[in-house]
Image (cartoon, rainbow, N blue to C red):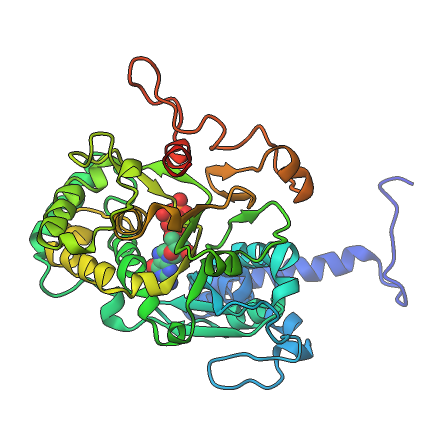
Amino acid sequence: MGFGFKYHVPGTHLPARYYLLVIALLVAFHVLLSATHEAYGRATSISQITPAWVTRNTPWSVSELSSNPFAWKNLIGDDYPSEGHLPQVGDANATFVILARNYELKDLIKTLKQMEDRFNHKYHYPYVFLNDVPFTREFKEWTSNIVSSKVHYGVIPHDHWHQPPDIDEAKATANRNKMVKDNVIYGGSVSYRNMCRFNSGFFYRHEILQQYRYYWRIEPGVDFFCDVDEDPFVYLRDNNKVYGFTISLYEFEQTVPTLWKTTKEFIKEHPQYVSEENAMGFLSDDGGDSYNMCHFWSNFEIADMDFWRSEAYMKYFEYLESKGGFYYERWGDAPVHSLGVSLFARKDQIHFFHDIGYRHNPFQHCPQGDVHRKGKCWCSPADTINAAAGRINANGQLTSYSCTERFTKLVH
Ligand SMILES: Nc1nc2c(ncn2[C@@H]2O[C@H](COP(=O)(O)OP(=O)(O)OP(=O)(O)O)[C@@H](O)[C@H]2O)c(=O)[nH]1
Ligand SMILES: [Mg+2]
């Protein structure tokens, strides 16, 4: 072999160099046309000829799934009951609730698969997917196909999502700009604020959710490490609990400068809503004077929507809404839910699901010892936010981000 070697295209006798020459001429012609004719360049650009699913950063094509009969049979309205969807076995009136954006599909599929394998393949609780814009066909196909149960897809009513008209936009903008300058996470984002307000006071009012009482909130991309053998919905129901969490944290103070003051005003006006057995000790280290920033991390919640629908919480949310702090500040649904449930429910109605291994970046809760073994968990027991839970050292400094030890001490 040497430079004189000529290889042949099978079935022809033409030397390869003639083919290369033709290809080179075609490429040169294409480049020339692209440069001189804008319309030709646009029509043949990579983004035009690349399938839509590639640019949306999902790893599969719609056509791959279209051949799957489960995804297509019996399409009724906006629901997707399919032959692969099994009747509910779990005994509770409960559902998963997932607020998501269409582009989060890839992360969500991974999460749903874990939820099915770790828990729902035995119980077949339904899923409710919510979005501020309609879900794409691709999103519905993939999500309905990966789960074992009934699914619903809902669009959020306009007023439940968007900034209310009584918000002073100049003031809101100025405050957002200040937060951006101060490097507050999501400080400049209006859509993040819409999401926090929706999760605080509206998701449980969505038409689709009216038929359900208990819910498990899931976010795209979270991990579930362990088998969940006991039904957590039934656990809440049978033990008369209203709220379950796995991770608790300290909130960024700059996002909620007036939330505590506002809450104190509310409970002064409506003392009848405050439970005698409340969990104030979780929220405050000085008997309610100031807020210690502890909150349950609400990207994971297993809870009772009838609690959010109660007069006490609805009135509380209305009061918060009237002060505008979701937009003038950046009140998160985690502190708002935590304050509501810690004040208006009994502390023994809040449950730490210590046996559910869970990760939402950058924190995780990994069960320890026998619980880890029994649950066949795949997380490292050493990597858990609750290990050094809520320690304050001799100088009063925080040595862990977790508030869970505070909670467990309070209830035991
Ligand atoms: N439909 C829709 N869902 C959203 C929007 N913003 C956030 N979400 C969803 O709301 C939930 C919380 O949003 P995230 O962006 O995860 O907020 P976060 O957990 O505080 O922040 P991260 O650390 O970035 O995860 C997730 O389930 C998101 O998919 C939005 O504009 N539209
Ligand atoms: Mg998140």
